[in-house]
Amino acid sequence: MSDIRNASRKSASASTRRAAADGATDLATVDSDGARGASHGSTPQDDDRPPLRGLSDYDYTNFYFGAGTDPFGILEPFGEWWKDAEFGAGYYLYGLPLGSAPATRVEIEDPKTRENLEGLINFASYNYLGLSYRPEVIEAICDAVRKYGAGASGSPVLSGTTDLHKRLANEVASFKGKEAALIFPTGYSANVGLIAGLMRPGDLVVADKLAHASVVDGMILSKATSRFFKHNNAADLDRKLNGFSGKKLVVVEGVYSMDGDVADLPAIVDVCRKHGARLLIDEAHSTFVYGPNGRGVAEHFGLDDEVDIHLGTFSKSLGGLGGFVAGPAELIYYLRGFARSRVFSCALPPPVTAGLLKALEIARSEPELRERLWDNARYMHALMREAGVDVGDSTSQVISIMIRDDAGIFQIAEDLLHAGVYINPVRFPAVGKHKSRFRMSISASHTRAELKEGAEIIVSILKKYGKCP
Ligand SMILES: Cc1ncc(COP(=O)(O)O)c(C=O)c1O
Image (tube, rainbow, N blue to C red):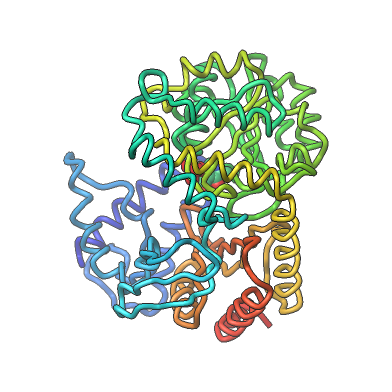
């Protein structure tokens, strides 16, 4: 364990230096926490190392930078910590293996106790419309497997495009009411390919501070100047765009994935217009959920045509895999050549594509699914409000249950799992430090009884930990 102390000491001070350079005060707290540990009555030591604290006082931040010249030098201290932290701290709660479809009740074999947990109420899947396991979707996938086999076996720009891919791109463009659309292997690669494909060194990309990692990675890859504006704050966006005369792209999400709040699109559109900046909206969590036709938050605000680029994923409401960009035909032609994450990656498997076509057809022809989702989301918000649960700023089907205790959230998650609720704890780096929460996803498929039972379990466990009145 002394290796951990050494790695942590070196990495903490390095990350603090880096954080100071980035202005990232969240990271800077790593060092000050370490210093505070000394006054907690810990065993005095014979050197200046911070005293060893509980497993949960370390996290990935402590292992980002390592000393020495060997890139593998960090692996051993990390491995040492992980050996104890996986089960001791609760990291095993990430990536629990489901033994069933991501339906409203799921089955999980608990890797810690080896128990088979059945009938858990599932608030962890993005399956907002319950389409991943609809019989018609499964049937379409099976038919396509028989005709096309398993994979596309080629990049979409070479041999990987089938008639199914062409149809999907056309259907998405028609659904979004745009001239054209481009299909990507994932939503992640759509953001990366689009941003890095369009923006160049010397340009400016300004994204909401809470934008998804794929937006951030696209910005890094583009080598354009990157700035972040305060979450959902159009006045700060205005400041961040001020004085820049080159090409500008602004990136927001429709519904923020970890907070469940909605972009202040009218104000953001105004600022973009004022500065001549192009606007990209990532509607990963809002396509098929918001707007009279389910096109997303841009449609909800009547601003569909004011947004230049519309991006979404097939992995959330459609319950499949893949991403898309929809917009003017010239943009799509350009990206076909310049979005490297698509050019140099295999096309979506045809069976997945066939399933998406069917799921899209259902989502368009059954608006009652969206209505049911909204009924369910409103019902759960009311249950949480009545119980005094802190849901932050969430107003959508993504409900953040704020815990704000990075070390303690795993214990609460474990209790919830054994009480019958599967819900993901979210902590740094997915959200800022000290902003840990449970991210609850509501589906149109949840029954009222499941929502009520799930809420009662959550509230009783939160009470036990003093996290609600
Ligand atoms: C806002 C946002 N954009 C993009 C993505 C990436 O999508 P995918 O999982 O389809 O790669 C996600 C995933 O959660 C997301 O929340």
